[in-house]
Image 1 (spheres, rainbow, N blue to C red):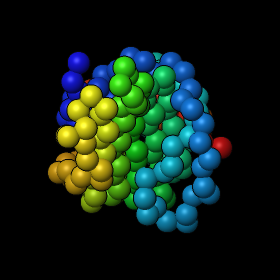
Image 2 (image 1 turned 180 degrees about the vertical axis):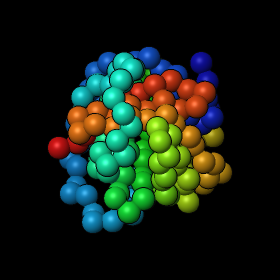
Image 3 (image 1 turned 60 degrees about the horizontal axis):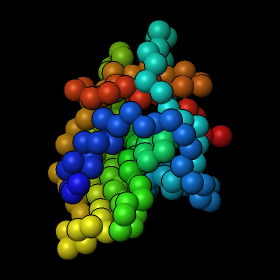
Length: 173
Protein backbone atom coordinates (compact mmCIF):
# COMPACT_ATOMS: atom_id res chain seq x y z
CA UNK A 1 0.00 0.00 0.00
CA UNK A 2 1.37 3.46 -0.94
CA UNK A 3 1.43 6.01 1.88
CA UNK A 4 2.21 9.63 1.10
CA UNK A 5 3.19 12.34 3.60
CA UNK A 6 -0.36 13.59 4.16
CA UNK A 7 -1.60 10.06 4.83
CA UNK A 8 1.36 9.34 7.10
CA UNK A 9 0.75 12.56 9.01
CA UNK A 10 -2.89 11.68 9.56
CA UNK A 11 -1.92 8.17 10.61
CA UNK A 12 0.25 9.52 13.41
CA UNK A 13 -2.88 10.39 15.37
CA UNK A 14 -5.08 7.58 14.10
CA UNK A 15 -2.81 4.65 14.85
CA UNK A 16 -3.77 2.52 17.78
CA UNK A 17 -0.32 0.95 17.84
CA UNK A 18 1.06 3.02 20.74
CA UNK A 19 1.83 -0.08 22.72
CA UNK A 20 5.57 -0.53 23.04
CA UNK A 21 8.93 1.24 23.06
CA UNK A 22 10.77 2.23 19.92
CA UNK A 23 14.49 1.61 19.42
CA UNK A 24 16.70 3.65 21.74
CA UNK A 25 18.97 6.41 20.50
CA UNK A 26 21.21 8.74 22.49
CA UNK A 27 19.53 11.98 23.51
CA UNK A 28 21.60 15.16 23.87
CA UNK A 29 20.99 17.44 26.84
CA UNK A 30 18.21 19.93 26.04
CA UNK A 31 19.37 23.44 25.20
CA UNK A 32 18.33 26.29 27.50
CA UNK A 33 16.02 27.61 24.76
CA UNK A 34 13.92 25.63 22.28
CA UNK A 35 15.72 25.85 18.94
CA UNK A 36 14.73 22.56 17.34
CA UNK A 37 12.60 19.51 17.84
CA UNK A 38 13.76 17.10 20.53
CA UNK A 39 15.90 14.17 19.41
CA UNK A 40 14.05 10.83 19.35
CA UNK A 41 14.65 8.24 22.06
CA UNK A 42 12.73 5.35 23.46
CA UNK A 43 10.29 5.91 26.26
CA UNK A 44 7.19 4.58 27.90
CA UNK A 45 4.25 3.65 25.72
CA UNK A 46 1.24 5.94 25.54
CA UNK A 47 -2.40 5.18 26.08
CA UNK A 48 -5.59 7.10 25.48
CA UNK A 49 -7.06 6.90 28.97
CA UNK A 50 -9.09 9.93 30.02
CA UNK A 51 -7.84 12.15 32.83
CA UNK A 52 -10.10 13.57 35.51
CA UNK A 53 -7.64 16.17 36.83
CA UNK A 54 -7.76 19.93 36.22
CA UNK A 55 -5.67 21.33 33.34
CA UNK A 56 -2.86 22.72 35.59
CA UNK A 57 -0.83 24.68 33.00
CA UNK A 58 2.00 25.05 35.54
CA UNK A 59 2.87 21.38 34.93
CA UNK A 60 3.06 21.79 31.14
CA UNK A 61 6.66 23.07 30.86
CA UNK A 62 9.12 20.25 30.21
CA UNK A 63 9.82 17.37 27.82
CA UNK A 64 7.05 14.82 27.15
CA UNK A 65 7.05 11.56 25.15
CA UNK A 66 4.64 8.94 23.86
CA UNK A 67 6.04 5.94 22.00
CA UNK A 68 4.62 2.96 20.21
CA UNK A 69 5.77 0.14 18.00
CA UNK A 70 5.77 2.41 14.92
CA UNK A 71 5.15 5.89 16.33
CA UNK A 72 6.79 8.38 18.63
CA UNK A 73 5.50 11.79 19.68
CA UNK A 74 7.67 14.25 21.58
CA UNK A 75 6.79 17.70 22.82
CA UNK A 76 8.97 20.25 24.63
CA UNK A 77 7.20 23.16 26.30
CA UNK A 78 9.31 26.02 27.66
CA UNK A 79 8.10 28.21 30.50
CA UNK A 80 8.35 31.26 28.21
CA UNK A 81 5.54 30.01 25.92
CA UNK A 82 7.60 28.30 23.23
CA UNK A 83 7.31 24.68 22.09
CA UNK A 84 8.99 22.19 19.78
CA UNK A 85 7.60 18.85 18.65
CA UNK A 86 8.50 15.81 16.60
CA UNK A 87 5.89 13.32 15.43
CA UNK A 88 7.40 10.21 13.87
CA UNK A 89 6.28 7.04 12.19
CA UNK A 90 8.76 4.36 11.13
CA UNK A 91 8.25 0.75 10.15
CA UNK A 92 9.94 -1.97 8.13
CA UNK A 93 8.35 -2.90 4.82
CA UNK A 94 9.17 -5.49 2.20
CA UNK A 95 11.63 -3.13 0.45
CA UNK A 96 13.10 -1.31 3.45
CA UNK A 97 12.25 1.11 6.23
CA UNK A 98 9.46 3.70 5.77
CA UNK A 99 10.15 6.94 7.68
CA UNK A 100 7.95 9.97 8.24
CA UNK A 101 8.74 12.87 10.61
CA UNK A 102 6.99 16.17 11.25
CA UNK A 103 9.00 18.77 13.16
CA UNK A 104 7.45 21.96 14.48
CA UNK A 105 8.41 24.85 16.67
CA UNK A 106 6.50 27.92 17.66
CA UNK A 107 4.45 29.40 20.49
CA UNK A 108 1.81 27.87 22.73
CA UNK A 109 -1.00 29.38 24.77
CA UNK A 110 -3.30 27.86 27.35
CA UNK A 111 -6.80 29.01 28.22
CA UNK A 112 -8.57 26.85 30.78
CA UNK A 113 -8.28 23.31 29.47
CA UNK A 114 -7.45 24.43 25.90
CA UNK A 115 -3.91 24.36 24.48
CA UNK A 116 -3.22 26.16 21.22
CA UNK A 117 -0.01 25.50 19.32
CA UNK A 118 0.91 28.15 16.75
CA UNK A 119 3.89 26.93 14.73
CA UNK A 120 6.37 29.40 13.28
CA UNK A 121 8.12 26.52 11.49
CA UNK A 122 6.75 23.20 10.34
CA UNK A 123 8.64 20.71 8.19
CA UNK A 124 8.28 17.08 7.28
CA UNK A 125 10.54 14.33 6.00
CA UNK A 126 9.44 11.20 4.14
CA UNK A 127 11.49 8.21 3.01
CA UNK A 128 9.58 5.38 1.34
CA UNK A 129 11.54 2.54 -0.25
CA UNK A 130 8.49 1.63 -2.37
CA UNK A 131 8.23 5.17 -3.78
CA UNK A 132 11.66 6.90 -3.55
CA UNK A 133 10.87 9.37 -6.33
CA UNK A 134 8.47 11.14 -3.96
CA UNK A 135 10.79 11.28 -0.93
CA UNK A 136 11.66 14.62 0.64
CA UNK A 137 13.61 15.97 3.61
CA UNK A 138 12.72 18.96 5.78
CA UNK A 139 10.02 20.03 3.34
CA UNK A 140 8.26 23.16 4.65
CA UNK A 141 4.56 22.77 5.26
CA UNK A 142 1.86 25.26 6.09
CA UNK A 143 2.18 26.36 9.72
CA UNK A 144 -1.42 25.75 10.76
CA UNK A 145 -2.40 26.33 14.41
CA UNK A 146 -3.49 23.21 16.30
CA UNK A 147 -6.00 23.13 19.15
CA UNK A 148 -6.03 20.54 21.95
CA UNK A 149 -7.94 19.85 25.11
CA UNK A 150 -5.28 19.13 27.72
CA UNK A 151 -4.68 18.07 31.29
CA UNK A 152 -1.20 18.20 32.81
CA UNK A 153 0.10 16.76 36.06
CA UNK A 154 3.69 16.17 37.12
CA UNK A 155 3.40 12.58 35.80
CA UNK A 156 1.17 12.77 32.69
CA UNK A 157 0.17 15.10 29.88
CA UNK A 158 -3.18 14.27 28.29
CA UNK A 159 -3.67 15.77 24.81
CA UNK A 160 -6.77 15.43 22.68
CA UNK A 161 -6.46 17.22 19.34
CA UNK A 162 -9.72 18.61 17.98
CA UNK A 163 -10.99 16.03 15.50
CA UNK A 164 -8.33 13.52 16.53
CA UNK A 165 -7.57 10.89 19.12
CA UNK A 166 -6.33 11.30 22.68
CA UNK A 167 -2.72 10.76 23.72
CA UNK A 168 -1.09 10.39 27.09
CA UNK A 169 2.52 11.48 27.27
CA UNK A 170 4.89 11.01 30.19
CA UNK A 171 7.73 13.30 31.29
CA UNK A 172 11.23 12.58 30.08
CA UNK A 173 13.52 12.31 33.08
